[in-house]
Length: 193
View 1 (cartoon, helix red, strand yellow):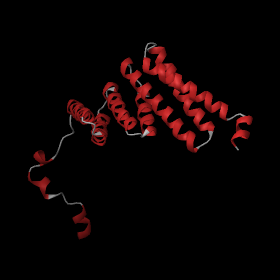
View 2 (view 1 turned 90 degrees about the vertical axis):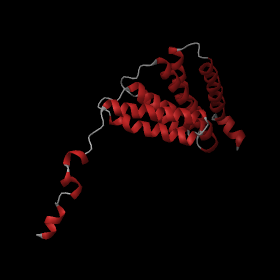
View 3 (view 1 turned 180 degrees about the vertical axis):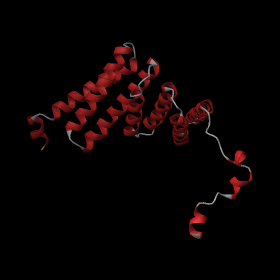
View 4 (view 1 turned 180 degrees about the horizontal axis):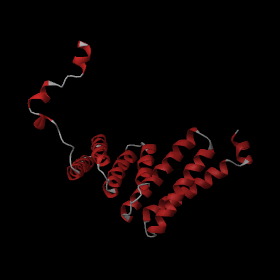
């Protein structure tokens, strides 16, 4: 009986003044501002080339963003895109691809400029993954990564045909794909062994 009583007692701090000690849920405006503040801090860290601090700030910005009743796709996709750029700079290519994919899958993500950036970052990471895979795995994995990169670039170029970086990367991806395809023919396999 006494064990039961001790386990359901109200903490003394709540007995004194229940209204002053109970925290309220932050408002959507407050959560949005927190996310924006973390984004600004991440941008400042990125400008100083402090990539780990920038990743941390962008990650912390996603927390209040996800607590919003209806998270604004523009804010969330911007945080993900910025963090993806940090991952790309830090050679964490799969994490970059993951953040870009999450951003692109947001249902109301419509900013064409940001969408182009996200597609470019994902394609560049996929290209880099293909290069990393090419040295340690099968050519099928390399080809799949290059094909995924090419699809992203083609989609980007449909929206923005004059994007020079995307056009250059697409040429690189095509050249790598040709070299990989040639390296998987029966003759080339025989020559390599």
